[in-house]
Length: 220
Ligand code: AP5
Image (cartoon, rainbow, N blue to C red; front, side, top):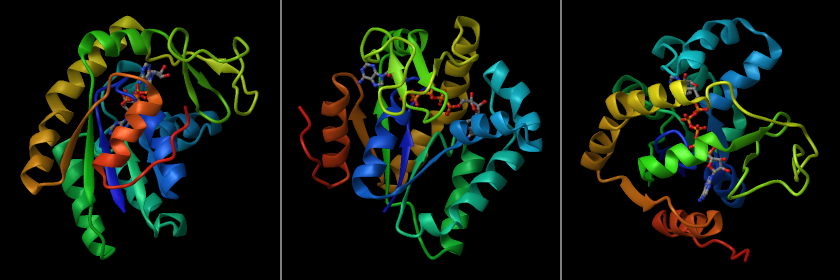
């Protein structure tokens, strides 16, 4: 199963994609995480992406598409993938469709996680992320058990440099101008599933699983 998670910055794509991918045994491809990982290693890709990410604008398509196309040919993607943060514009969506045809696969479903702008701002302003395993926390809605430490791996928590008010505003602007048209693009293919993204994390996971026709284990 190949599923795209679509949503504005802070909609909960990363939170949900990690859980759903684990539950359905799918690979999880998160382009933002891939760029941040490259920055930790100081690679050429990181240098190219850094200035765009700091400004809250999209990294050029030729860099992003190449990175994703290399990643989807890896063996762990054979049984399916959850794409988180990709595609983010029409050119990326068309490149992905073409690449999937080349692999004799297709995107099965597109989950659009819909969240109000007011809630997005609250979420991004209070987000903390684990440096080691990338698990996101929120200082109000999902704080870690020990302040500054990841519950899962004990890693240090940090705030992303693009989670500051001016950059958040730019990222939302980019979403509405460049990514939101994909809602229409996928809607025309009949693959779009809109899921209400406000409520508890577990409740939303259940909504996503049921929208894609899978059953999930209740956790609470
Ligand atoms: P990326 O890392 O993809 O960031 P984003 O799309 O802006 O999305 P976020 O990671 O901010 O939000 P999310 O939806 O994953 O929410 P999360 O689960 O963390 O991209 C960063 C940059 O990289 C881009 O600006 C661009 O420069 C570049 N880039 C990446 N992909 C690219 C591409 N394809 N093309 C070009 N450039 C690209 O949740 C947010 C917060 O809310 C957390 O604190 C979480 O704990 C909390 N939360 C989650 N669910 C709930 C809930 N149900 N209730 C309350 N709080 C919740």
